[in-house]
Amino acid sequence: MSDEKHDAEASHDVQLTPFTLFRYVASIGMLIFSIIIVGALMFTGNTRVAKETSPFVALIVCILALVWLSMIEGQQASLVGLPPVDPDLYKDSHPLTYKNAALAFKGDNLDRYLMGRQFMVLLVVFVINQCSSPLDPKVDVLGFSSGVKFVFLDIGLAMIVFTCILGQLTTQVNASHMMIDYINNYFALFTLYTCMVVEFSGIMHSSYLIQNILSAASGKPIISNEPPREGATFAFFWGRVLMSLAILGFCLAVTLVALLNGDTSVSVKYPGIPRGLAVVLLFVFMAIVGMLEGMQIAFFAVAKLPANERGTSFFGRKTCDLLFKGNGQNLPGFMIGRQLTVVCSFFLVGSFTSLTIKPGTGNNIFGVSDGAQSFLNWGFQGAVITTILASISWQLAASAYPIAFLNMPFTYILLVIALFLEFTGLCSGAWVLARIQKQAAGFQYDEVYIGTPEERMANNHADKEMNIRQDVGHLTGGGFAGYLAGSHDALDGPIRSRDAIDDNA
Image (cartoon, rainbow, N blue to C red; front, side, top):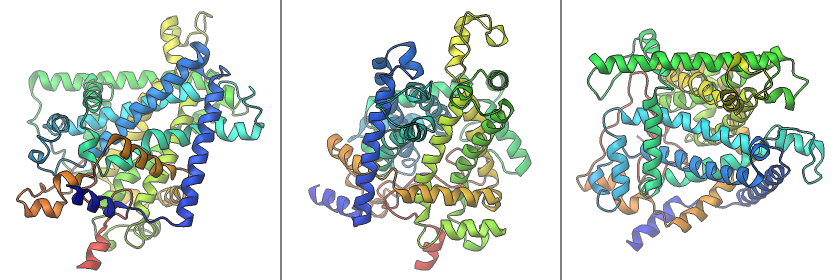
């Protein structure tokens, strides 16, 4: 076992260069500064949670939210990568991983989990936003200048950095290579059940209507692992779709009316923004989120296609040339830069959707009760709007029309921005923290337990064929089914695109 561990460690080692070391140190320094300035902000009582409860509550809730976000993100990397692997290989050594897999891989449960997970990510990020985002940008924080406060607190660079590093990338780096160890615990099982309950509640079910519309428009079927819905099951499903549409409509109405009346946090933070422009900016930021979510699906979909079948326009070809340059090393780079941009947009959307109406003053929106107004003030309706309209819908559209996404000029522009953000190394510290987490938790690379895909094949435990689905409506969709357990092509190395396969043939 020790030789296998050594070989696995060696195969995943990242070559350290002076530039890499500089980015690691600078990123960790940025993370520490971000934590200090946000912590100081909380203890001025200038965040919503700190003001309405206490700074200590804000700090504890923020920490717990980051921990849960890290599990949500890491669990996804595990659950989308393990389906091809024979579960008998880890059934005895990792019983809780087996329980996670048995539930997630039954019928269409993986799609249900991913939909519930998408809402959970937005909800948890919005909670972090309420704990760490300033209410009044004029309040002094550690004597910093207004320029520093504007960049790190108003724009939210501090929250973006520690959310991406602590809540997302660190855990994704480990979980993409250590899928089996990562979810071998009851916390992962609890998170899986929570995401399944969220999907079952029907809050996100209007996404299924969008799925059916895209299927009809594209001529691609919706392939299911379960029998067609009939009778009570059919009625219950479409009843939840109608309920979801009603919830979405109410959330949109609340947000738009509040924006036009100047009753949202964005009017406090940025009073110079006209109310009509605030409405436009909300949809602009949601469109950016949607494009980045769809691009992820589209990029993985076309990665397995020959180069001449990818982009069919000037910008489509430029996008593919940049994305698959060399051996596809820019694809993981995009995923990291994309994470920064998406989280930034999430925090900005949170400012547009959290309300500032004081209950009991007779100004409650639509005349709702004081309790309902207090709940709406937290802005969680923004999580519903963003999940359905700015995340899931665009992913479903990209799974139906991946080439169309590549051909749009905005795709190329956002790709360049994402790659630049990755180049800056803002989140490079995630690799340092991932190594620390790995040692502290005792994680081992998947190949230590189950071998590489080639070794599994040689031992009569070959992975199941997971073909690219030519259908619509799977959030693993567009050909992205995670990384093969025990392979060496995750976040620390290039993705093997069709170009590299053809070159080696």
